[in-house]
Image (cartoon, rainbow, N blue to C red; front, top):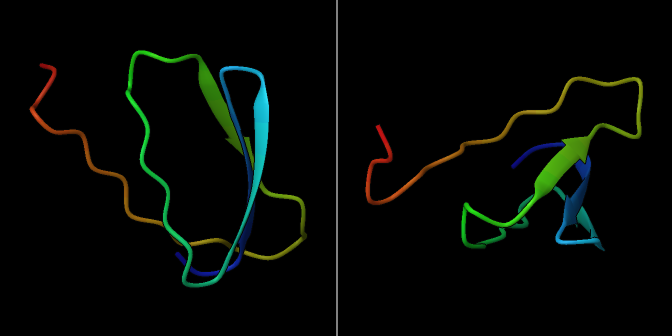
Length: 51
């Protein structure tokens, strides 16, 4: 991850910064937002595939 993200997972709030990672069950309610006026870069992976 590059930049900064605020991630909401199952009503908990996590602040991620450059180099951080997070893992959670994809079925939990979640969303994220960019708190800065800068571009973020992240890699998202779902395993096993859900499609």
